[in-house]
Image (cartoon, rainbow, N blue to C red; front, side, top):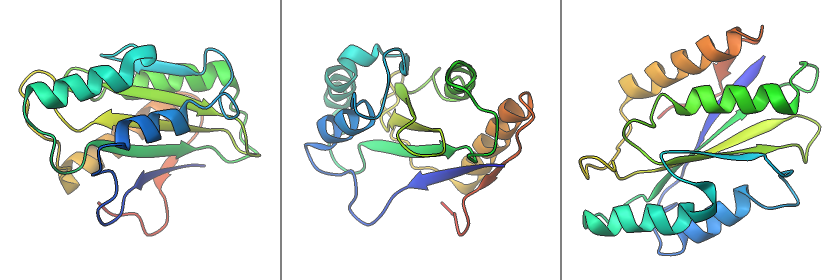
Length: 162
C-alpha cells in the first residue's frame, strides 16, 4: 500500500529561499539518480528560476510558494525506478495544465518515494493555490487511480488532512 502525504506546517514554505532550498533538497544527487527528476510545465533544470518568474510576474510573492507532497511505496511493493517515473508523470498531469511541477524519485531509503513540488501560483491566471479539501480528495482519488494501474492502492498518510 502506498501513502500520500502533504508536507506543511505553520509558516513553512513562505520565505524567499523556499524555491532554491526545496528544489535543491528534492533533486539532490545523493537522493536521486540521473533521470530521476521530471518536470511538468517547467524544465527541471530551470525550475527555480521559472517558478520564481511566474510568481513575480503575477506579484504573488507573499504566502506559501510551493506545495510539497510525497508518495511513498511500501518496501515490499514491487515498484521499480522506471515504473515510478511513469507513475510520477501521470500524477503530475492532474495539475500541469495550471501549475509548474517537478517530481523527484528518491531511492535513498528502503522504500522508494516520489517528492512533488508544485508552484502555488497558477501560470495561466496568476491565482494562488490554496488547497481545498475537495481538491485534496480529488487529487488523492486520481493518484489512487494511477497507482492501481500498477496493482498498488494509495491512502492518505495517517492523520493527514489538508
